[in-house]
Image 1 (cartoon, rainbow, N blue to C red):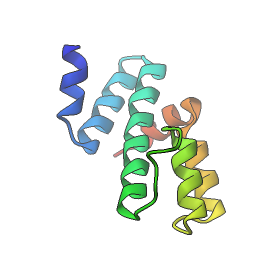
Image 2 (image 1 turned 45 degrees about the vertical axis):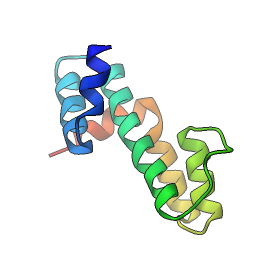
Image 3 (image 1 turned 90 degrees about the vertical axis):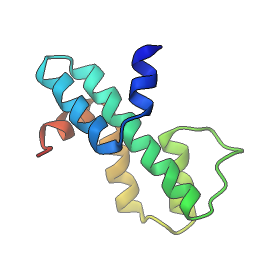
Image 4 (image 1 turned 90 degrees about the horizontal axis):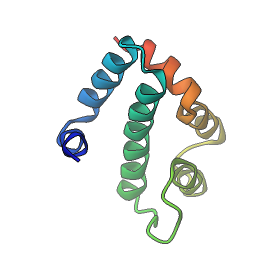
Amino acid sequence: MRFASHLESKSAVEHLCLAREILVRGFQSSAGSVARSVLEAHVRRLCAWHGLDIKNHRSNIAAYLFRLKHGNVLNQDAVIELQRTASTRTSRVSIRSLP
């Protein structure tokens, strides 16, 4: 519980730095989960910012991306790239490319 409240108070950049540190320590799955949660929060905020209704839908990255695509916010190529990034395996790779 203490760890969860610590995560809630951090910015997205701080979360990604934390994910990278976790990755450096050898916990690839955990690092990917943290990075994925940052992506999910950002995509959720994009839906809200564009006024897309997300309250009556499943709350996961796929559902948010579906709403963004059908709301003409993202094109198909962007959705495919974000879905690829959201997978746990590629989230680990994406963290490695952080500055």
